[in-house]
Length: 130
Image (cartoon, rainbow, N blue to C red; front, side, top):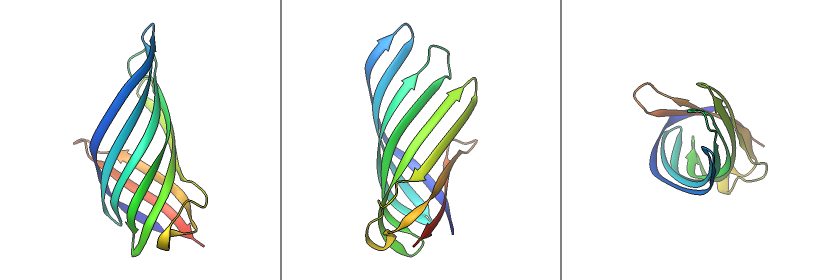
């Protein structure tokens, strides 16, 4: 199945913990609100690495989304992994196996996040429950 919607970043708390010669490591807590087929809130903990060149970065992290997917309520965890270099990037967001709760128990899938020209974000979750 496919769930689509939007999300807004409500909070971004970034704390650098290591900086050398233009590179930086940071721990970041991000909170979001989701609307659409996925409705609810989330909290993500990200470990971020910024390269010395502008626009070069990578991050890994985990995010708990709590609310509903279509007509099922509960929560699940997403595993994030992304890199960016020279304006080109790649990313994966996958559901952590056996992390679904409530009516989302057994959820498996992959997510995509798209940044819109006006600064908004769309969220797509391709999933199955079984």
